[in-house]
Length: 203
Image (cartoon, rainbow, N blue to C red):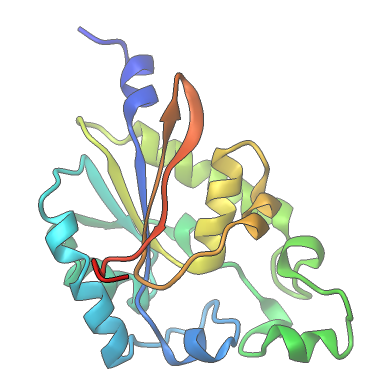
């Protein structure tokens, strides 16, 4: 019988960013605003199903927001979906709904990673949520990997946290809508097994 430690070392986290929304396409920071997927975003999410439904996940978690939940449904894993509050997108506070160039008119070198958001979250606060999300995913009962459906900034922050770079390490990872990424292991060391993989085989 394997010890839990060995099982945990083998469990990979599949990160699934939701499909396209209007604000995702035009660069507006979308945190708590509960935007629906665009028709294009629904198509992107459906393209995940042939990949994801071939696999057997120990658990499937989604952000409570509809763009993540709908992506999980269309991706074929809605029947297993559990809601995880820790997967909510970064709280952008006063910057909700505006773009980075607009913010930089008043804060020239602003990034979400370095400055955080007034009346919202900073990287340390997001990192605490990411650590909880990772612990929950690794502790889920059963065998197999765990799927996490969420948002661009939180999934990038989660990746930075997984790799020991902290949430702010997420700035190093570009993540497209409805992409497939896998956080895994390399000889017992946390590593990226796959990153930002498109579902379209033609890409």
